[in-house]
Image (cartoon, rainbow, N blue to C red; front, side):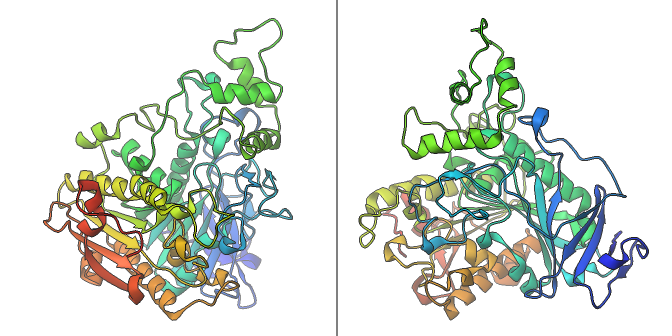
Length: 543
């Protein structure tokens, strides 16, 4: 494997392919990739982890490239860049509506917002259209020349309902996990969101509308082509997403089933059956926004049938103006409601995923599919006037079942039908801890497993101290996942005694539950969770 990592002071003079040159007084390191060299850093808090926080994977989608598919960067070995600061997040609005996420309880689950607060009601201060960047965290020991093919890689895609999210989210920063394991690499990415990622514009008819998904694919291709330079194995990439990122990973499994790049998937709280992409052949939402930011049909031309003039005009409107209009319109609760999300085009996002599944048009690769026990408690309107009792639990249960439980079951069923050589490993996160559950009605809510998976639970110690059990649950979850990442076909069974889920089993197969009843983990029958989808028993959101 070709590997070049050298100290910042040695960039010009000591670069020798396959040789590591590091000066003891330097906390900076540089890696050579096909698109340039990038200087990262070593954070003293994590002395054995190298961090490259902002590496571009595509050209900036600005000006005439706004609302175009991501374009590859030119190959360049001479350009040098610093990757020591996190990139701006892609354009997104910071809502002023009170929610779990912008209250102290969940600080750390939103993007870095500069000098603004987390309920500003404005476009994020630290956002930019020049946002197509990824970050890499690697063990320091991976810098040494290796005889093997390299370390396994986790490729993470943020959640956020396709309207918010990014690399720079404290809950989703993995250096503590990499520092602990010293045996895997984590990559996290930005991708375009909301109207910039999913415009459904008339001017793009027949073209690329699901730009955010295409951004993800471009980032994955860059990682495939360059991760060896960081000590990673391009043939051992597990594509991982949470929430919208998890749904995205499943979209990739169908859209790119013949050339997945990934060796496996981790779908964390969401599958393609968790959402329903709705076609809008009138392109009404994009046109509605255009008319309100000064891009109505040109004078004397009331039938811009192909939308070319509308699109041309919209490419000249500042992104902040567009985001503020959409976000403030939504905060006011105006109608008709505006939405920019997945667009069925039967190329990237399909109209009928049941039919695609029945036809076997899905990547024949192992998967972890996980969910939290009380997903929807954090997705219903925040009960600001009734924080003691919380939201109406039957409504929460209905959302949990329709968004999490049954889509997870359906995705398991379809993958099971492909045969035993496509193992599916399932777990449920049911932990409740003082620093994550100030309100008991939250239970194991949507995203509460993020700080457990990433090992960032101490960010909430201002609410209550991290418990010993919480640390043990986090370590166990990470160990189970890493066994899969290193060998998705056999690792979970041989290393952790974790069996693939087979839903046709009389008891619904094996499922791991983390954090319930004071236990780090326990094996439960799959029917205990999935039974409600088969008309068996009732669902328990607080196991």
